[in-house]
Image (cartoon, rainbow, N blue to C red; front, side, top):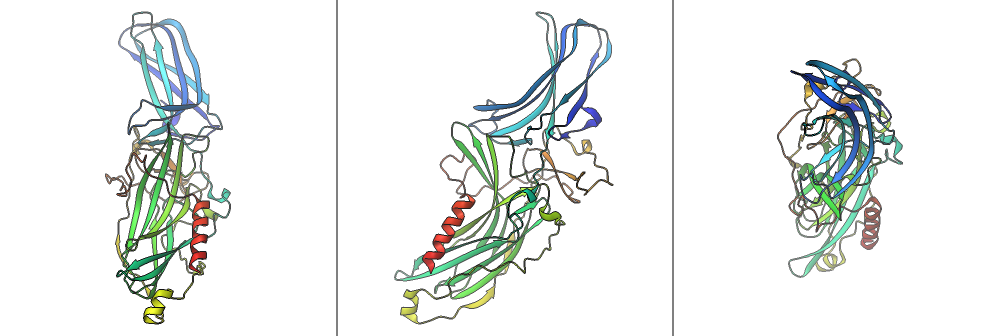
Length: 414
């Protein structure tokens, strides 16, 4: 067992504990040893522990007792390790995991059974969002889509999405504004805003696991209307964006806003961290009134103008049709809430943030503020065009690719 029944440690911190042996009779042994191991493994198959690729971060062994005999009763052997400063944050997913554990073994004489046990602990290297350049700035992306309808007619859709920040913590609301200019005589389909998680596993080839964490749907836009849609997505308990020191597993998050018909979408890369931008309090009502509007062309398509004359663009608001906000909290293997003890006086302070549980069968981690973890059996939603295997599909574009694509689209629209 570990000292003070702890389960979460920081890189560079000492890890102390005790190996306890209880015997009903005497036991002859050659050695009693304890090891502290940190490693990462990735497999080509889902939930398979026969790793295709592995990397090790540390592996230290202490000898607690040399050759001898243990009498009946209880025997305690204290130990202490110093975790390396480079130890990465723990993580567990369907295709791989970053695992830290203490292993104990009683090495018995030849032809006798060895006795082994292990205890998993979690390492947290907090991601301070303030260390990321321009993280406090609004995140905006715009795209223009030309499409045909009624065989001979054509029009343009200009879709612009803006979030109030580029990084968030658990419990914080992503304030999202969407502007849609429907420069056509055809109504659009519904508009959908999604929070996506992409985990990339480096095996013989990259495996992408893309999940929809939360989704909000708004109504479509009528012909020749300029519509605005303001919504928010509450960030549930999620693993942080960056696993510093791990080269086999990469975690990214995106806000994707899409229109179902005609098909058009924009993707905003964001970060999920543990320390909020400029110590912003957790609030689901934060306003984005001052977010700058993207400059988009306003003239109607030439084809429509020639066919039916100029159509003024009326400004309207889009009502929200439905929320599918998930609360995908679950227990990490071998962990129960009873083991988590956070002093109420320390809760919410920078040095003692609240312990939360991450999405999926993964690790506990910290976030600022009074965030209460809620267990649920809800499974995450996979978009229909993706599967958990992910081989044939490309990941969402990088931030640079998204910016390049958006700038090109706006230029073409002008």
